[in-house]
Amino acid sequence: MTKYTKDDIMKRAAELASMISETEEVDFFKRAEAQIHENQKVREMIASIKSLQKQAVNFQHYGKTEALKMVEAKIEKLEEDIDAIPVVQEFKQSQVDVNDLLQIVASTISNTVTDQILTSTGGDLLRGETGSQVKNSTPGSCS
Image (tube, rainbow, N blue to C red; front, top):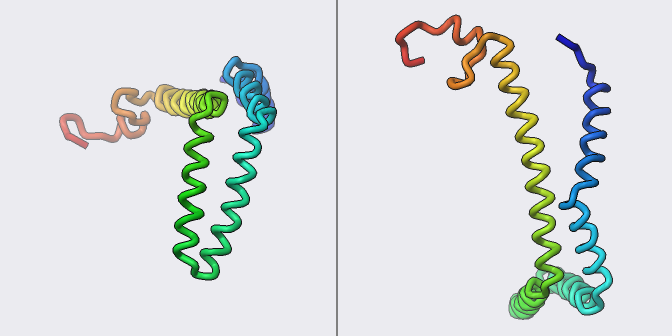
């Protein structure tokens, strides 16, 4: 059995990260983000939201609840308008796709490590028990 160091693993993780950054999902994400930054309408709407958010903080600080409600409604409307723009929808979907890919990788690593620990100790994959748990459990018991 080969023994690996943390440095070995970190090097492989960097390689894996590099591979992920070269996937179709990440490439699409980069293109969608660039399109958003190039879209004047989206940039103006984002700037408006940021300005309104600053106003909201001030209104909240000074206890101006009616003004705060009005500003929050404007922010919500602008966010809905931005979300309705196709390039923004594509960008948000690309974020989900990249995140899903990262979650799949993390889950695969975690599950594989767990399975290999169970297998290498003579454990039971179906019950999720290591070899020492299997050895020390009473036959016929429910534990």
